[in-house]
View (cartoon, rainbow, N blue to C red):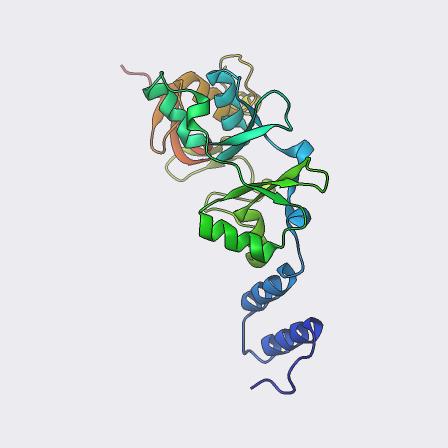
Length: 260
């Protein structure tokens, strides 16, 4: 039993620190509980991605341009605008873009999902509840004058509780983008520059407008790569290990042995 009872949020946090010191809860549990308490005072404006940093798609952009943006940014959802960037008309799921390949009669407009608008002052507790109840993962944030201020995702909100969310393939930047494996193959980040791949493997990859190996391979494939899909290019065998938001996060790369 906690006694005396905390009378304020600061005292409650001090109680959590004391509980950790007494081995009642672990450090991770304390941090998450503190995150829940902090989040109660935070708004969408506190955690949003500001408008100038938003990755938007134009409803009038050709398929190849849309694919290029999706591959380069590695997001899974994109606000779509018509005319001015302030005029956001819907949200496009990266996976839905594949439907245009299978059914050319479809249009981007037909694939759009409704966009949710929230004010900057929207409390994170309320926003998280709405994300959960409405099965939305993204909302466009509007300022007091009705202008687009930014966007916020369910991941942005959850990270206030659990800290930065990384998947199993996320590694620290200083761990490198080309990693040698014990079976004489390599794990290569999709964000690795084409120049670096050329130098590391002593090859000459095709010159294109793409700067990363992930973008180049997806361009050469002509579609959004799928996990486990192989592709041979410039004497290298690229096998897709992991994708996120339509972009390749990691390849397994091996040298192609010439047949005799």
